[in-house]
Image 1 (cartoon, one colour):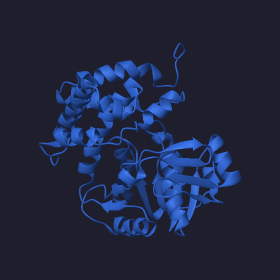
Image 2: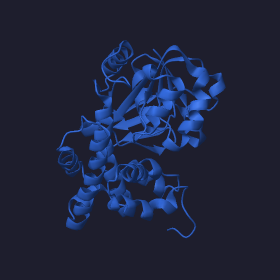
Image 3: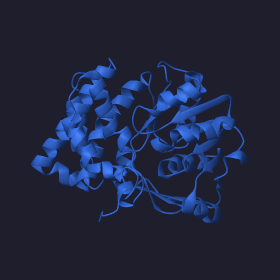
Image 4: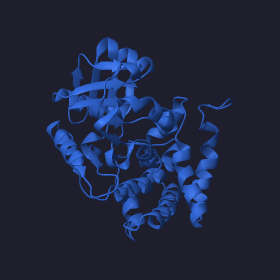
Amino acid sequence: MRTIIFGAGAMGCFFGARLQRSGHDVTYIARGAHLDAMQRNGLSIESRSGNFRLDRVDATGDVSRVARGDLIFFAVKNYDVEQAVRQMAGLVGPGTAILTVQNGVWAQPVLAEAFGAERVLPGVVLLPADIREPGVVRTPAEAQLGGITFGPYGGGTSERAAGLHAAFLEAGVPATLSEDIWRALWEKFIRLSAYSAATVSARLNIGAIQQTEAARNLLESLVGEAAAIARASHAAIPADAARSAFDFLMGLPPDIHASMLDDLLRGKRIELDWISGEVIRRGRDLGIPTPCHEFAYAVLSPFIGGRPEGSF
């Protein structure tokens, strides 16, 4: 299977490296120091399930030199989605599947409108990962959370989805096919929006929040707001979604945090508009109050474009 990792950051490289190691033809579209390191030294993966290294990878920052793929693993940040959609038009052939793994519930419809819903496979990834240094990807909690759930945009099953599922399993990646991927997306969004708002606002790993009553109460309120939005947006979200999400967050390994915190601490742009911002916008449309997410958004909004002047 010819695979293009469009947005070869930590997550894209993790899945791309697994596929390449199992024999698939993989091209990584990356940029900056990470791209330079991959071109010089290959790609290293560090995880609790075992470290490995690919001495040579096909990595480029020039989309025009990349041939069409059977699979495009679309892993750019939400703020880069619209530009990336324009850039990748030449990579999509008649049989190309697009597996999209953005946080939130915004990017998937953008891709479906651009390329057709029948080729889009929305995915849900539960995998804390970061670039420890250029060319080195670290997944500190893969053993507990690794894997991917995906399925056809419109629900049900498809040959595209089934073929990709088999490829992931052969590559040693825990993969699950969903016949209602939007339920999975919304259930992740409930957890992610609360987890991100809490850990990034506090600049803390989740363990400190789990152990502190006031912070724990805030986390539970953040979950409740997002769950109310999800239930109003997708009929299959169960009545106990808030309790399930809160229990999940309380069971997370204590030494992890949202990837948005890594971006904030490194002075990068953050995806706040597509996380708490999405909760707030939908809440206003639906008439659902979201005061805790509004608080988190207010606290973090100066960092949307990167580290502001006057920050520590």
